[in-house]
Image 1 (cartoon, helix red, strand yellow):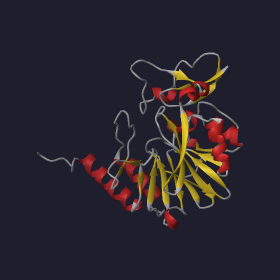
Image 2: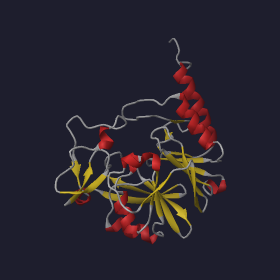
Image 3: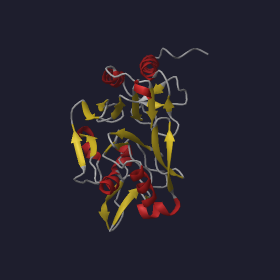
Length: 273
């Protein structure tokens, strides 16, 4: 029996003798099935030619897989008392990575922004004997269930130690960001996955229903995101990939980006060139 892993999104499935007939996450219109069809792998096969890199990224520690696998996100370790909270998740977990995480305080929990990053969350939770905190709005996208999965259903969840989960919706119904009150030397930081997408122009962010398929969100979804974030101060924004970081004026960046997005949907940004 093998816990097969979707090679396109990195999601791990329950143990079976043969690969699943499809990956529901990739069949969804927010993701995609490659032109040459669905491919499957396993943690064992992935570990043969991939490895994890653990390195400092501004004030946090990131964990990412090289060469890039599936969607290519990296996870972040956020200080949580004497331990860490893992924000978002990656598929590959090996002994070397586990030892490095333990050296840095281990994991007290895992919180994930949305289903595209569920990856091998159960493997990580079992290895570190910690809960996985997911918003109930995305429950149907959990492909490998486990007693470690702990659902929450409110609009915010105070995790303690200055960490708060905020449901923004948008990209997914349960789309979640993490506010780190002690981040940026006490000015606050937002860990946004791609619920709020850090883009090459660090003076702006963006928002989408589907990134690979370029499907925008409606105005009411943008209004919900900005309303959810309005009570929280944050100077920095950590996106989903290495170096995708807004280093200053994070709150202002989000609000003016939302305004630009609204104007774009109205057609106000178009010019007769």
